Amino acid sequence: MGAEHEVPGQDIAVTAEAFYLVNLMLAPGVGFLVVAWLWFRHRTTAPSLARCHLDQTFFVSLWGGVLLVVANAALFLIFGWDWEWTWVIVVIYFTCVHSTLILLGMLGLAKAMAGKPYVYPLIGPRCD
Image 1 (cartoon, rainbow, N blue to C red):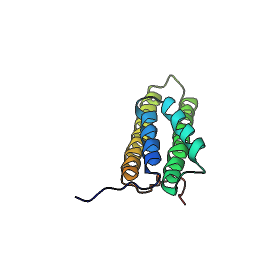
Image 2: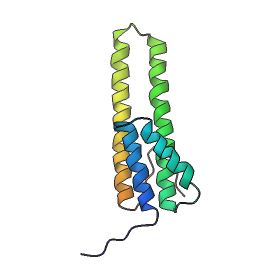
Image 3: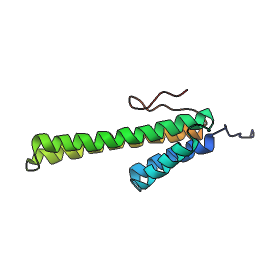
Image 4: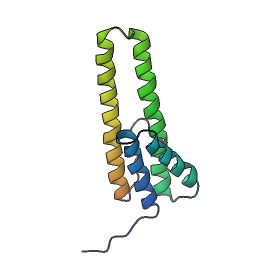
C-alpha cells in the first residue's frame, strides 16, 4: 500500500462540498452560511483546488436557491393556489431539481475527496 498524500486545498474543498450537502439535506441556511463564510474567507488565498470547489458550492447554492424559489413562485402566480395540479407540479419540480442538486453535490464531494476539481453542469462557474 502506498502512502496517501493530500492535494493542497483538499481539506477546504471537502469541507465546502460537505456543507453544500448539509445546506441541501440537513440544515438549510446554516449550511449555506458556512459555505458563504468559507468562500469569503478563502476565495483569494486558497489553492486552486479549494478555490474551484468553493466557487462551485457558493455559486451553485445561490443558483439552486433561485431556481427553487423563483420557479415555484412563478408556478403559484401562473396557476394559483387553488388549482390542485399546481401542487403536483410544484412538488414534482422541487423533487427533481432538489434531487439533482444533491446528486451533483455527491459527485462534487467525491471529486474533492479524490483531490480533483469538479464543475457543476450548466450552473457551475468554470474553474481556473
